[in-house]
Length: 137
Length: 253
Image (cartoon, rainbow over all chains, first blue to last red; front, side, top):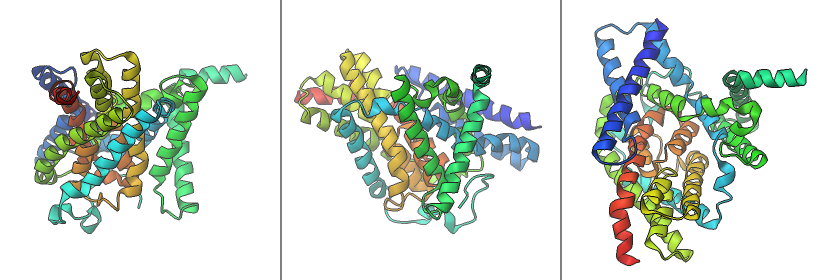
């Protein structure tokens, strides 16, 4: 059933967020430390396990794939609800500080990636991972 | 008649948001195909349209949530809010192979620390350049350049003034929005086309909304890798900025 997939996704999210919350508290910070990332790892492991044991029928998968496919529309809605006006009325200090941070961050990507190796090959060079309803190019 | 339609759309705000975003996606993919010959990704155009609408919404209402403050479009706030965004980000991990993540894991970790440090330094340099001399002010603005959440949390911890906190939030917002716009433009130049560089990108830039939208506008298949590291960034920033990094700033000021 489709709801099994959605519930699996929701369960991974809740468990991940709880772990992230506990991690934050252990370190004494008022923030969730990587809850979403932990939830992603959980989803990868749990679905991997279910798949190898043949417990992941297509209908269950479609519950996860729906939210996967909704990612870009959700991000567009997120962009439309950003406080863009405040960002650009903060004055030159805010604009320059933000811009410099982005420029340096982007410039360092090739430095840390290093030379091209097998795991840094473009995604297009091998069979595309199963993404349904996305990647229109 | 008009009033009853308005109140209906207001009542069914999330449904209205689905329709509005669907229309935006349609228009932007049409523009991508017919005006740019597919050179500019449809998703990138959609995000730019979203940001432009958010700007006008913010000017028009004076609120904090862009277009979502306009009563017709309140559903956008729910649809694009943290809860559904994180659910969708997690869903993108479905189908990702763990080996890819493991192979780039160490570099991702290095990128995380480097990213927080470099953003903080960038913010600090700019703050000093504009004549700020108090260690608290410099640290708060610099923390804002990490993310717009790290800034106010750091400011609150250190007891910064509300003007400086507002400035640090603005710096973080600029970073997030510029990331959304600049990432698809420079992606080819910085080699952002594979899982490894996406993880490093997520760690270096870190601001979740910027990374999420920047990668969506570049290549949606890269999203899970970038999001995986970026999700640790704000926590790390909150851990480092008011403590180690503040002490570092105090050495000089």
